[in-house]
Length: 243
Image (cartoon, rainbow, N blue to C red; front, side):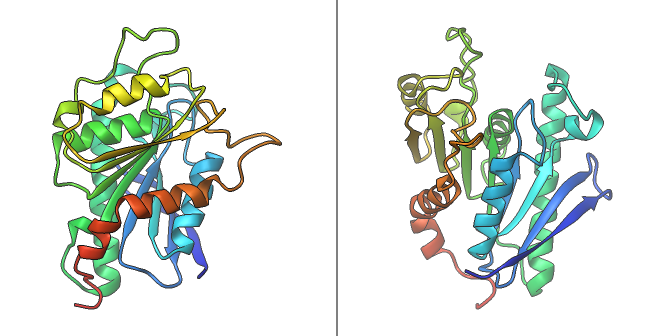
């Protein structure tokens, strides 16, 4: 597969600003992916880095970014007051990445070519943003969606799901304390958009991607599943670089 260059990226022309790393493939296929982290992590999370490398090697331009709360504080979780600003930061990242793709090929904007993904809190905020703005991106990749706090299944984080009209692939560990597979399957029935759940057997909230026994094949498998899930959209989309 073609290689990709990785560079620090900051765009301070927007508020909240966009900060992270840009993975530019040697040969672009005209699509873009934004990846962001969970509540306790940052842009350097090993799984996000591995996914960015895998997607960019396949021709996808990837913007791996820190959420605004993490830009403001180097450690600690986000607070309730951070959520709206974090979603605004994600929206800015989408706009910035689309501009990068358009500039690279001097073509009109193609919304269908941008995808949004996140782990845990980052995925939840991504899904909430898409529920608010259903035309923003063409697909969601939600890793370890935090359906409820550990041991508190009554506190379901599903209020926005009936408004989610973006095709969404969920990747979830069978031992994730933030929601069982069965609980997530019930939640998916609330979503009017096309969805798919793939389960990583024996994995927890980290999807098994850490330590000596980490699943090295996981990024490639996720890429394959996401590509297959969105295959109809991608095959039917007009390629803005060859039109």
